[in-house]
Length: 467
Ligand code: SAJ
Image (tube, rainbow, N blue to C red; front, side, top):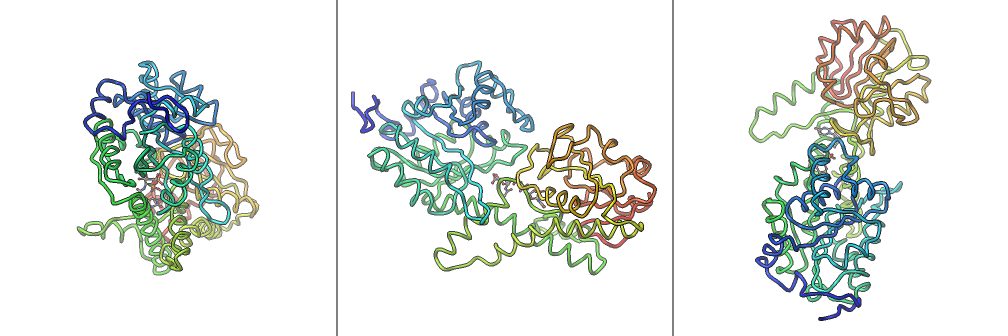
């Protein structure tokens, strides 16, 4: 029996076998995976691979997540299908979790790293969780295993930061003793389980053999198509390109909105008409861009670009435009209140929706937070309502148990998130609940401007300032 340099017992590693061996191992239930990080991406990843036939051990630093998982529970209730998938696969004995990476990594064929990569106050990427996971993996990995990085990282971080750590900690060589691949997650929060079974995956690794193996893993266990990229940095560039494409196009939509407000033109009418053209992909203006991905991902590319002396100005400017939208919404609130002879100071402002996007229970970098803090600082009393946070404390405010509770006697109603519930607002009822002369500021364009104005509201929408 060959001993790996890390002194662990090991059998012939997956890297030494073929894609066919891998599929056989998966079929026989002998394929073992470790997933590092059981958050919004890691837990679904662990669950779908278990559902696909692998035996998965999830690793997380949070005891609550580990205990929940081992008792078949899942806190991500806003991910359709995930709670059932976790329960079923824990009951089947295919999925379990641990706080101790050494209980997961040495026996695994694949180690999948799904830890967060936020940016810090200075907008620099914080890769500390990724480097820590790489160190732990390097210390425990067995010969012949493959490391897959699903976390979103800058181009070159896999080759220049993660790889040296893995080689140094394991004392082994990539491409010879272990494999390293980037397979960035591409899942849409709020729809992740379905996405993981349908959206093609991108795989780029240090050598062709490893790329073939990782591709075979995702194809056979998840049933998805796999795009083979030239190398990890290309795979990471692909992920960032699709997210920055979205962020820049949202910024363009926000810039059109700011312009068309000055011209008295309805930006939504314009965008929807443009969307009838075959090559126009509609993006919509609003209170800004939130979430763990788009507000951060640009900086991975900006920072790597600046190291080369090239400053990606368009990408940077797009961030500035999107980051300014919450302040624009505060201006719209102030204007609309003026229309009814009121000021922000002393007004009751009901904010409907705090999540960064519809249908998810997530306030990470939500643009609504700045609207709440600015209006509070300007002397308004704030009441919040969000169907995902009923009765909970958010931004220091108690979220109401109902829309009615939050909107009662409000001088201004602000739509912060386009949750389903807000798309069928009963404007008559809202007008009766709100104070006599009230404003309505739709920062997610869910309501019909004319209908709002017809109920006597002083109306403002992002890109809609004409009624
Ligand atoms: N938004 C707009 N206007 C739009 C679309 C979105 O203002 O037209 C806002 C949303 O309200 C939200 C933010 O942008 O605040 C981000 O929304 P999103 O729908 O892009 O959602 P994320 O960040 O949850 O997911 C994105 C997705 N990326 C792309 O669609 C290119 C998802 O597929 C990625 O997997 C995810 O980032 C990620 O993890 O990177």
